[in-house]
Each structure stands twice: as structure tokens, then as C-alpha cells.
Image (cartoon, rainbow, N blue to C red; front, side, top):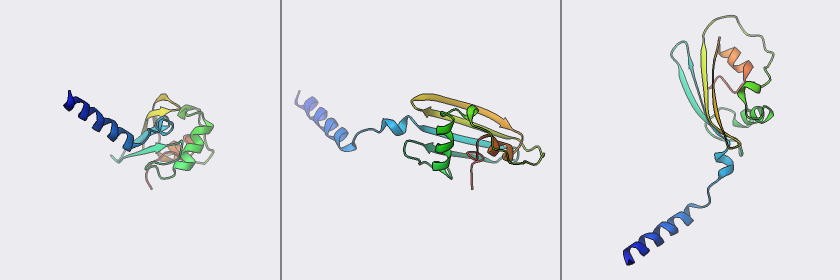
Length: 126
């Protein structure tokens, strides 16, 4: 019994040192990826209770998503003119927004159209 009590005590001590979990950030955590017609691929993370992750502009992305209730399909499209070239961009978003599952996939005719539809959340990269 002494070994079990020691293991339990060590596990409880380790858990207390780790600090409390942050369910607020976990409930606003997304993984975004894109593939373009040239074979390019990019993937970033985005957290939004406190904007962060590897997205190029997490504060702006979170602001856009907040305005759309976390629904990419509800983002109001920007009205920037785009070239008519066809260079498809596939975007994927998975994760959680306000505790609810997010699973968004869409193909756009080019990077400019992806940017307009998401108010600059896509394309990913520089």
C-alpha cells in the first residue's frame, strides 16, 4: 500500500505544479491549413481568448471570427478587386470555437478570393 500512496502523492504534486488548465483558450483553438495549385502548403494555429498562435495576425483574425460568431461561412466578404486568374486554394479549419467543434473546408479560385472571403485570415504565410 505504501508504494501506491507514494505514487498517488507524487502524481498529485506534479498536477498541482502544472497549474490550472486554461479552458477558455482551449475553447477558442483552431488549426488552419491551405494548399495551393503550385503544391504549396501552410499550416498555422490560432487561439482567440487571448490572441496567439502561429497565425501572422492573430488579433485581426480573432476580431474577424468574433464578428462572425466563429463561423467562417458567416464572415462578411471584403470588397477588394481580385484578378480573374485560376490558381485554386483549398483551405481547412478544424478545432473549437466557444467550445463547439469547427470543421470548415472550402476551395477558392485564387489566394485573393480566399483573402476576401475571410477578411484576410487566409491566405496563410507572410
